Image (tube, rainbow, N blue to C red; front, side, top):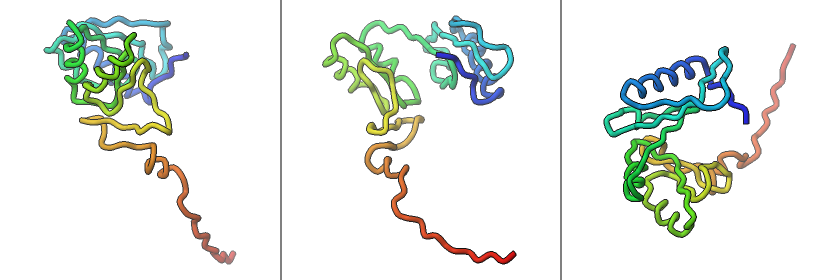
Amino acid sequence: TTLAPLSSQKAADDLKVQIAAAIAHGAKAEEVGPAVPNKGAFVQPTILTGMDGDNPARLWEFFGPVSMIFRARDEADAIRIANDTPFGLGGSVFTKDEKHGFEVASQIATGMVFVNHPTKVEADLPFGGIKRSGYGRELLGLGLKEFVNHKLIDVVKIDAHF
């Protein structure tokens, strides 16, 4: 996989400011992967740790190659951490016990939760979030019909005189 640039230089600059603010509030940052180009809207992939309850960055969305790692004391604490966010688009539960994974997934307050698979979008699955990550679902059923023509468009003949 090749790391692509962000959508704009402003997006890259804003993301770098967010990373710096997270660090200023006590997070630890580790840049990973091969060095990104100096020119363009690139941001070095970064892993943030030490995101304690006082760090406001734990509640931010980072639109770029930034991952936050949280340590949980146990399963209940992991569920609490997963639900302690104003967002809720998607999540994943990874486990050797798939049946138990579905039990845990049912406790995660998010629009989509996958077991032993990263989040994904497919035309045959409803897509959408809760909280500040969206309202309702798209795709599947009626959503699929939004991407097809329902009827023929009437063609109107226009006489042009040149």
